[in-house]
Image (cartoon, rainbow, N blue to C red; front, top):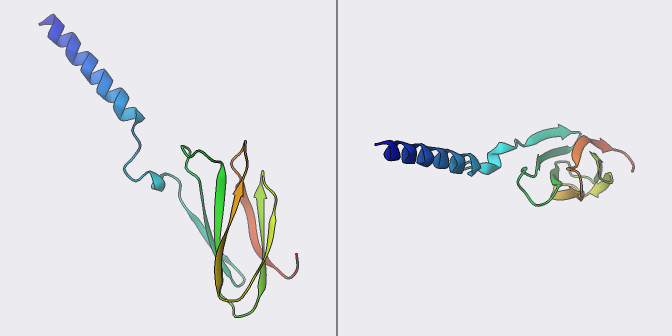
Amino acid sequence: MKILGKAAIVAATASMAVGALTLPANASSVSAATAGKTGCFTYNYKYAPWYAPSNSVTVHYTNTCKTTKRLHIRVSHSKDACLTVKGKTTSKKRFSNALYIPRVQEIKQVTRC
């Protein structure tokens, strides 16, 4: 009886340890996406999950106007981007860093870069 009790405790502890190491079924929902609008642009971005092998963030943007506009994206731990985007165009820009996760600080439409 004593041996059976110890075996049950070991089995329960092992199953809890395995459960703690498994990822949620929808692991992408762990980090929420951020969306917004500035001038003629709509944008969204989502940080790479904590378990991803790279430190990066990708900003997806759309120019909703008919004319060419400029978009300035300011990011910590990475070089800023000033993009010239043709009208009615959708694209993306990836920011990465070897040591730190880049954080989006500001996205705004500008008249010149």
